Amino acid sequence: MKNIVIDTSVAMKWFFPESGSKKAFDLKDKHIKGKISIYTRDLFLYEFTSAFKNYSPKKIEEKDFFIALSALMSLKIKFLPLRYQELEELFLLSRKLDISVYDSSFLLLAKKLKAPLSTSDKKLYLKGKDFVEMVLI
View: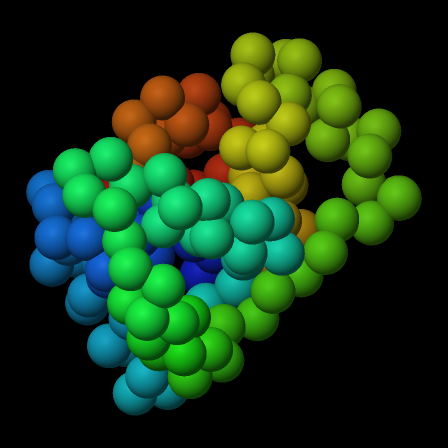
């Protein structure tokens, strides 16, 4: 089974239809069918919750967030924490690529797992494509 890493921007397309949603759904379906295994950082959980809290076109009702959270939990995505041993490399990578530490953490995870990183963040894609295999959703 192939491992892939996603950042939060990919998963949000499962809940908020927008450009790239079909590709994001394809990844989710492959994960459900056992063709791939999805990994991400535990940072994802903060970003996921924040995206629902701050979704601007309309206020998300609590019950809708709870439904989305339940759906996310059912996917059994593997959430990996940042480790002390990674901090030096994370800091240097963030500086070298001139991107946030948060975005760098997804790149570093993809490197550690020797897996492609899927994102819909064009800036992250452009900055990270020479560091790890990247897929722009």
